[in-house]
Image (cartoon, rainbow, N blue to C red; front, side, top):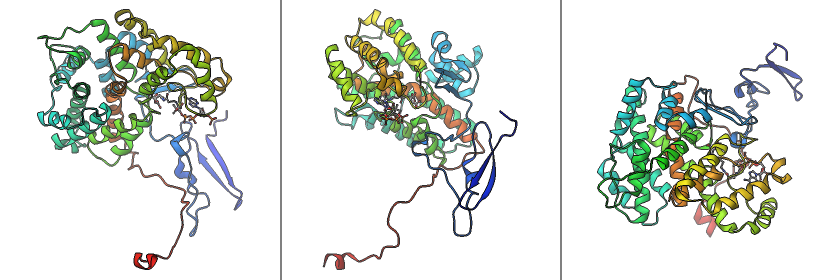
Length: 431
Ligand code: SDX
């Protein structure tokens, strides 16, 4: 490839030629606006529904190579972090851009541990939901509500204020998530236990009953910690794009993250893990798999937990989660749906429909099996995803706030509606 990093574009409507610089494998969309621009013509724009081929930002948080199945947080391969780190250390890495010293780690863990409580009015807010409210709806609302308890969070230009909200959100997400779970079960809310680690405390708030102190199984706490690490960030996915887009209006981080939770709620995104379990349960037995696959190939439905906008090979997280299944099932017993999932994967990976579309299992295909084995109902799976993704959303939001290139998100459109209609008042229209 030559050193000449430019694109020569010829506008055949005018014969004009334009030289556009290529930077980091991209051309600035605004450079296309020069083409065909005149008094009466607006100049070209680029059209990209779902941003399938559009870079919205520069970022140093997460690197993904979809063809090679590579995922790195701040340059560290996910396989090493999942095996050797902890979720709070990974959260520090994502937020601060480097691994903590001993002192930094101790201060970070202390700060998070002592911010796990929420205002009692937030508890009253959550108790106002119907008994069968979906936990994601409760999480979405309660995180947004936190912006009213910390009005100083609007001062996003102050790094100390930003840091305070980052700590509060990472610390309180498990509390809000656990209380959404307890609400759905009609059980009393359990307050945080600051003697426990982050995931042990989460398990305590979820499952503690009348015992004076919850005794978490360290193997389950560890498995949950690994799952949170695997979900911690994933470059410009749908929910992160929502956080950045809403954050670009310079709103407080609670409101921006609540937008991310809303996006994650969708079945094509974080809601897929819940959809996978319902799909496996609906298939029911291995002999029903071929008919189900035929339905997918006919376009009747999607094979949930398969496919990815970026990974055109195995999602490295799915590979790690598959291994984590064994550790959890050793404690809880094998989830009977595992066999159906494994057979479904085997058949799909041999079928040209999936091979030709490069559809492989993604992070959501196996995670639900573990969550269910950990006694979580399917409605809680995406809440677990949101707790894991919180440091990633916040790292991306911090990057947005400091990025001098960023502006308020306001895309163009291709207008397809009517023009210049004559308005006839209602009384005449209906006469
Ligand atoms: C997450 O972006 C991220 O990083 C997300 C995430 C993260 O960590 O933040 O990784 C988490 O959201 C994982 C994805 C979870 N979602 C699902 O498992 C839902 C099922 N998957 C699909 O809906 C789909 O694969 C997406 C949404 C994940 C990706 O969709 P794309 O990139 O827009 O691809 P597409 O819909 O254009 O599909 C291309 C083709 C189409 O067929 P044709 O029109 O060419 O005939 O593949 C087909 C699709 O119909 N296809 C599927 C399929 N996924 C895509 N067919 C059947 N089953 C599927 N799961």
